[in-house]
Length: 635
Image 1 (tube, rainbow, N blue to C red):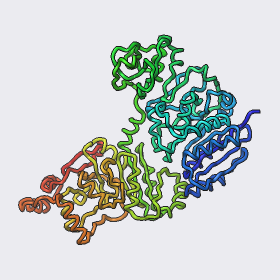
Image 2: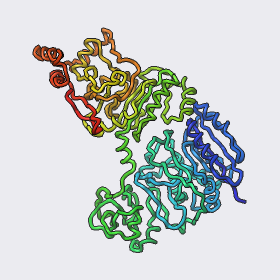
Image 3: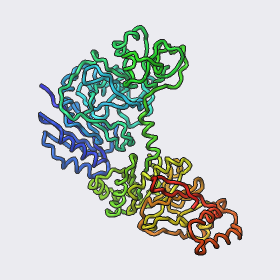
Image 4: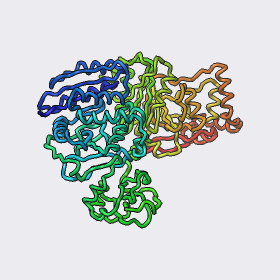
């Protein structure tokens, strides 16, 4: 009798993610009753449990398991796998996944075909398009079937049978530590202690077993921040959206079998290109292997050396296609390992992670320290962030735990994607801001109070400035509240250098708030290690970087500009600590000219360049609306 796999969801503290996954399950096709288990690891999120218990599953039996102790990701997945003792086959879905409408049809057919295959240790519902080993694009070579095989465990929709999990569990009980690490790829060794997947890959390699993967993905990963992940969207893949009958085949017959480095096996490549048959070689087309890791005499690699025994181009993708079709070129070569020093690889492929990191260098992270919860204020701010058109935009809301319930409800209601961090019981701005700054991942950083808002095109304008001017590390725009209906912005009250900062401290009229300012992430190394107030952040930036004022409204502060009143002791300490800020005295002649230029009709823009130069103020950026660019100006 054909067994219907049980669906097991591993949930933790992401209510919106869980709801999205459950909605996709409701849209899937089921021809028989299906059991659903929702396993919830202990967290502070009551909403996750409410969603699970209130979810109506009309396709069969539903059970919610709420753990009374926090397991962590590794133990939680191991618990889910152990449910194979109760159910003949299970599909494990973490809560940040989405399923294809036909995921269950694939699961049933794949289970039926591979349930008694001893070479198969698990079945994946996910299809890789980027190699985890090196972050280059990946595509399994076509061999006429709908599947390929790899010594990589799937964590984004694995299916396990009772037999498969029992064999792994028995092996794992005897190999709890990664003692034989030499056989593991370096990228896997770097995974943290929360990873169950690295133990399963260790098992696959040690026991020469494989996972089955579909060529069209039945799940996709939203890569929402969790125990083992940050957000990059590298592994977000297209889903199969049409029903089909799958063509499966045994691994022994497949021409599409890959190792843990996402490299095709030599036994497969030999069947395509007979010129390789007489060589005992390993494959390193991505150039990510340690070539001294085994005793094989030869290597087929994209790493460069002199006089290869065989050589191929690297214009076609997947890379092995170049060897299959004997494409001429010098990008890939077969070498005797002992006789060749190898240089860096030479590939036409772009590295997906490098490309994303380059884009994220000019992406923007916004920290919102939430000292109190006000629905209308927060809504105003997040709507202004949601309206931005920049590709990489990250919002981090930091709040005390007392706001957890209302904030979770608010985020679900408005379907706003943000990282919400709860900082014990504190409402202190310094602690909240420091917590947020620790978590930023994009190259440009700003922070703002709830209730204030950004202009619609602010982030794209800021990003373009940082891209265009490598010398700029810190900038601020003019406050829209103070410049509505103005075509020319007077920047006198915004421009600062170290000498002017010293003078304003002396006169008790310095605004040290960096709210709405934008600065590069690398400007604040170590600043967020402990709590930091806005004054400390301001002086940290001013000590190392020049503030550039932009004659453009990036944000709207509903509160008027605040001049900080320092106590006698605070002023004394600041003047002493930043004595090196003090500039030399301005000559009487310069003071006289500056005063003279303020008298009408001389007080017009044509003379401002002189006033600015005698104050030794930095240039400002002004916006050219005709060419949609920014340019430096003396005034």
